[in-house]
Every structure is written in structure tokens, then in C-alpha cells.
Image 1 (cartoon, rainbow, N blue to C red):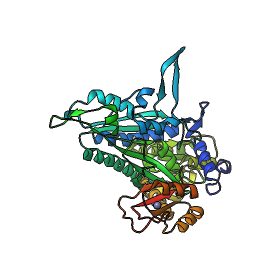
Image 2: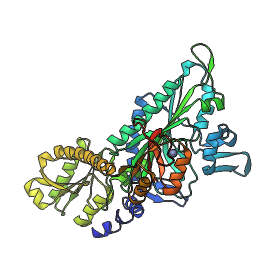
Image 3: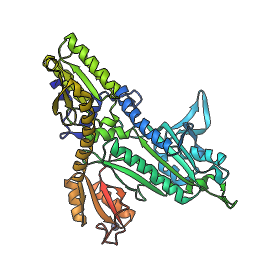
Image 4: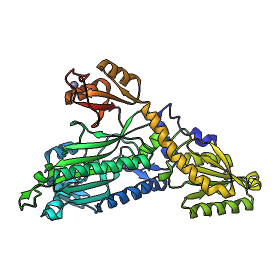
Length: 474
Ligand SMILES: [Zn+2]
């Protein structure tokens, strides 16, 4: 068992190397000959599928329909909205050749699909009766990233992107909020992530948006991970694309638009928040397998009993796997920890005689002995406890890494000495944001809309308009 664990670099020694080794040992991804892209292995993909199932149901419940857009965008279409193209041009991949033929107009591989949706909306929106249009697509996008890290940043990204059109700005703004609330709730309740939600600054907002809301998660090492965004576009794209509808007064008007998305980055956030030096730790609500059953010894009675228990658990909607390999029990235990199964169930000869099993929870590695009759009840109870404990533990750790600085000196000192997020009053000027980044490498995370700024901006001394979190980011 020592060997498996030894291969995982300590989280406190080298966080980056630890993250990569956990992912590799748990068999979530593999590297591909296609540089900068990852292969999501079946166990990693199963986590994604659990996430997709919950979110897709939420999207449909709130009236959205799935569709599928083309993957390639003609250059002329990408160029229609100026801010958008300027924002994405540096990381776009181009198709210039089709078979033997050099294309007259090059095509970009979608870095996001706003322009494709607008092109389509222009054709199908005629009247207020056509609104709202609430669409979503699950797909991959390509952004030519220079440095990549599994799940967090890769050239090809698996995600969902919602795109909606509305009669009024009020309704579109509501939609922007409704969707980040769905993300926020999902990340708290399912991923056990204590996320912070706020508005991006002008400098950090999405290219072409009027405003961008962000879900900011804090990783174990205090780094920020932007874990979902929801954008309000106003009429920017509608005007650029000439999308108009006849309103209730029979006048032509431009509709109001939103888009919103989350990616497999959420898997990275789960790992970087909850996992440890023994390997993966998964919140039960998104773990593909909840209980790993390990028979100790080769006694057929024990093997039969293990099968029986597994069947009983499955009948109670608890997913299971049985480790019947030839490996030693110690090795099996370590492997179970590496894979992050929320509960390990051990059954050895002595347990069998006593009509008991040992349950080991992955988050704390604590053991409990329970009788055969109590297994289902205890497992259900433990799963709930693990889910709650992971959230509480992450919340406490995050709260311990939230700071507030009154002066610029104090800000720089915290930035240098302590990982985490630092809250300051801010004047709203991009020049201060840029100075802060140049001096400390910290970027603005989000404006806290519910908090009132008082006093002055510690960077320039002018009147403060906002409370903003700054932090280092992935
Ligand atoms: Zn300032």
C-alpha cells in the first residue's frame, strides 16, 4: 500500500505536482498525442456524466432546450462584433484547408458560439411571440492555450453553453441571475464547494458582454478558480447582427441576450478542494461509485456474503464495486483511497463470524463496525455525513483564507505572505487593477454587489465605489 501512496506527491510540498499525480493515479485522464488536449478516461468521464445529469435536468426544468450548432465559424461571422473578436482572436484555431482545396474564407473552430447563435437567431426571431428563446448546447470548444493543465486549462474544452434571447432587458438580466444561481446551488449542494458569486470588473468581463457574473471557487492552496460564468449582453450582439423583432406595439426592436457556461473545470475544482495525500476525495453526490466492497481472504462464504451485500446496496440505489482481485488487502485499501470511493466496506473472517462489516469513510478515514442488518441504513447516513462534512471543511478552510486590507501596504503584505482572497475598497478604475496586478500578480476576482464600499481606494486614494476580492488564479 505504501507504493501507491508514495507515488502521490504531498499536497503541502508541491500542490501542482500533487494535483497531477492524483489525477493520474485515480485514472481520470490520460495525455494524448494531440498536444494540449486531454483524454478523459472512463472514471473521470463518469464524474462528468453525473454533473451533466443534474445540470441538464435543471436547465430543462427552467425551460431550456438543447440543440447543436456547427463547430466551424466563417471568419466574416466571427468579425461581426468587434469586442468579441478582439477578445478571442489571440486564441482561435483556424481551418484553412478542406481536403486538397485551400479555402477562400478560413473557418475558425468555435472558441464559444455566440456568433453562431446570433446568425441563427436572426433567421428565426420575427415577433415578440418568438421570445424568449432559451437554448443550450453540450459540446467541445477550442482555445489555443499555451500552458495547459488537466481539467483546468486545455486546448479542447468540454462544456455547456446556454444562449437566450428576451423581449426586455429586465427579463434578460433575470435570466443571467437565474442561471448563476443554478450554478451556485449546484456547486454548493453537489460539489460541496463554498463558492463566491459576484460581478466581473470591466477589465475581466467576457468579450462583448455588458456584464459578467462569475462563480469563484477557492482551491486548497488559496488560488482562485473561475468555475462558471453568466453574461448579460444587452443588445450589443443583436445590433451588430441586425436581429430585430416586432414588439407588442408592432414596432421593430432589438432583443436582449444572455449566455452562460460551465466546463469540466468543475472536476478540477472538486479535486483541488477536497482531495488529499492519499488520493481523490469525491463528494458522494457526484461520485460514480459510492461503496467499494473488499472481501478479505478467499473464503467462499465471505465472497457470497459480499455479493449479497452489494446487491442489497444496489437495490437501495447505492452504486457499488467489488474488489475481487488477487492483491493484498492493504493494497486494495490504498487503491480504494486513491480512487476516492466515499465508503470502503471490509469483510474479513472475524467480521463474518460476528455478523458485522467495517465501514471506512474516505474523507476522514474513520472506521465504524456495523451489523449486517444496519449496513444500508449506516451507509446512507455516512454518505450524507460525508457530503456535509466536505462542504463544512472546505468552508472553514476558505473562510480562514479570506482577508480584508485597508491600506495598500497591508494589501501588498497579505498578498506576499498569505494565500487566499483579499477584499478591498476599489475606485472602479482599470488603472488601479493593473497596478495591483503588476505589483502583486493578483487579479480581481469579483465585485461584491451586496456589500457597500466606504472610504477610499487604497491604491489611488480616490473615492471607493465597490468592494472587490483579489486573488491569484488558475
Ligand atoms: Zn483606485
